[in-house]
Length: 82
Image 1 (cartoon, rainbow, N blue to C red):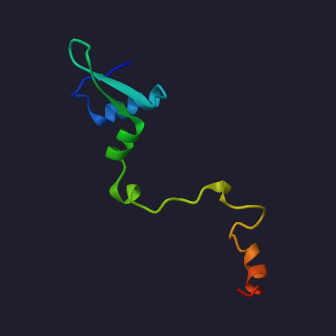
Image 2 (image 1 turned 180 degrees about the horizontal axis):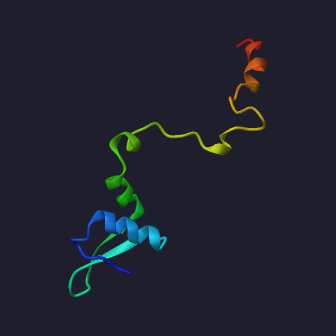
């Protein structure tokens, strides 16, 4: 699987999706490698600006136990003198 330098980004995204690729080589007419396109490159070009620059999400494993707000230890800490 390879693409040429003039391949449209939509076609690149479709190829990468259909074949579950994380990278795809870009070659010239003599099949010499010119570069490599990564899935991150495709996302950078295709995602809207407001999606790319938003605040990072909290990872699902960031919370311990059943306290998704992360407030369980705060009540105990509130009574301590510093």
